[in-house]
Image (cartoon, rainbow, N blue to C red; front, side, top):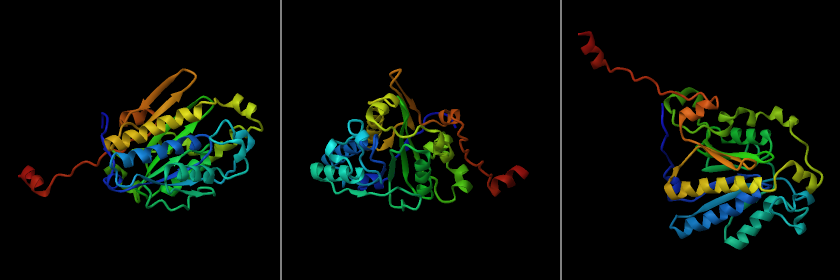
Length: 280
């Protein structure tokens, strides 16, 4: 299969609220969530039925090193990140979103969810999202970054019986773990740097701008999805050092370049009547 695909959103995301889970309210999450609230408001103003219903998962509290680098202030230190951001947005934007001050695990029910946005910094956390969304009809938008580069990748969770029927649906969008398996390999987390003990040290390790840069790309993707009713591309690579932004097309050929084995549709069997005519 060659050429870009045209992937339309399911009708339920046009007719009712988007049911969204955001995993992580730290660096990228604290930048994504205000944009998500703006999108909710814009959707309502443009006639969408209910906008966005959102639940945020994060068991972390604000530390002094988070102030300035993430969307928090000195008075926030010691408070839960998820509840702080959700309460602020509910008060300022009139939303009725929920905060879960606990870690997102594979046991979280996602069967009624339309979209999971991952703003996490460990492979184990990504693995939990992949496991929780398995057998669910849900999109998974991953927002990941390193020191001065990162990626935004949207895909679809593996439906029930996927391993048996995947040949019949080659147009299913691969998620981040299928395009980049190393990003959900929890055994590699031990090789990552330990948390910084000061803001100065943290800034030496990571650009002050990278979280916002990734959040903007995620926001643009979601806005385009709403305005067009379709997913425009599989993802985006961002490199602040070079100033370059490169998209990942909705193209099985592009996916194959990352090592993803694109499923092929099954060969059509000739009908009995056709076989009879050939035999005759």
